[in-house]
Length: 271
Image (cartoon, rainbow, N blue to C red; front, top):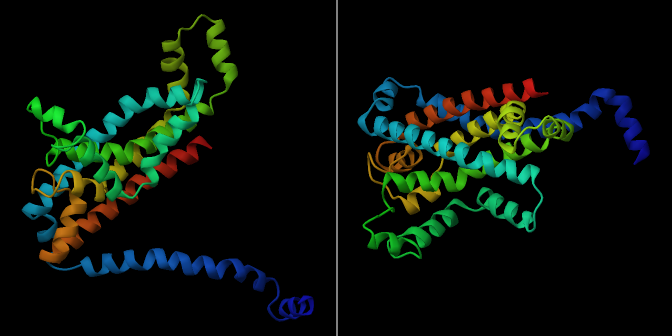
């Protein structure tokens, strides 16, 4: 084996060792890039704008933008205090709480949708109580938001938790010495320092909510203009109108590229 390596080195030089890393990397990158390139290429057609601006596409895009924005707002408002608590406080069973929060990230979307339906469906564990009050959640726009929050908000909590945990403890101790309250420490010290991590988490949450499909279709259904988001419209369009499906797919890709570029720029600035 040693002689074989020496012979290969003599034949190919240092470039041979580089190809050991470069070749498999190129194969995997090509596997990721080629389907996206094929989709973009096939979408270039005279009727692209017609499909992208069709009534179904416009309603799905509008609903997705509204619901994903509300989801991100909910994640920021409720998730920021929770992330701060997990990052800076010590308490019993903290590891189990973190496990519960991280679980929706790895759960299959269909399982998430089924869990929401069993919990908040009309005959669900808590949904039946809501039904007696005249509140019906499944197959409404509220159900879309709940499904998105369930699968996307943990991404914000995770990012914010990391941001808060990286704040130097000496700053925290200095703030207490200066007489700062817990709220002043959180608002005037922690938030400004961890703002990039919070912004990055919010963008990831918005992107994940925008692309949510499995939990939404199980819990909210497919009602045009009410619960039919862009991913669901793409799925339905694959059978009924392929042009609309491809147009919406391209829009999602472009939005995702823009948001990921912003996220990477924030990460570079933080470094």
